[in-house]
Length: 198
View 1 (cartoon, rainbow, N blue to C red):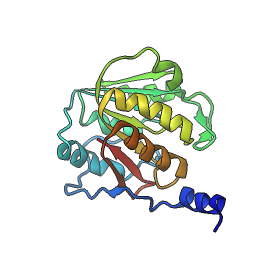
View 2 (cartoon, rainbow, N blue to C red):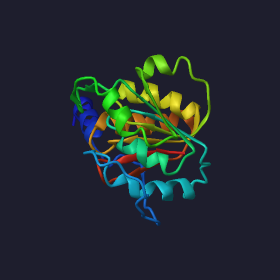
View 3 (tube, rainbow, N blue to C red):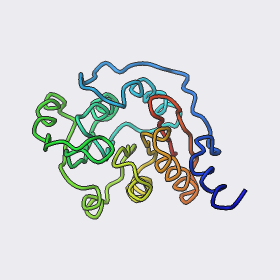
């Protein structure tokens, strides 16, 4: 087998060494947003992740809010949640018209959520705060996931990455980020996959 063929097989191998995350306590939080989301199902393991890794509950930052499903999930667990998004969709989630005001209105009853309409590349140049948890669910390229994820890991205790089982580039970026930062990495293989770096 040639080196090019071997590398191609490795890139597409979702069984690349990564520890599988097995939650013990699966429970839905009391407040959920009634919108379609590829994140549905993951809401039930967030409490387990936060408890298992002793994550404080002060602040959470999310890159890739879309219509706010995961943002509301996090608002059940944290005093403050910040959602960063262009609110325009992307090549992978589907291009949409600007839905910032619509999302802001549907999340208005959650006083602990702040939405910011910005490109993550601009936003991370200005924020030096530390967050207890970060969540990355942006355009599913290796470079964007790695660049945003590196900032998130440098500014949080734990970082979650959605779509590790749907996009090989996301999974590879998560594995490489764990290696680069010397942190432990886990993957929850359901609901499109959730990478956990702690």
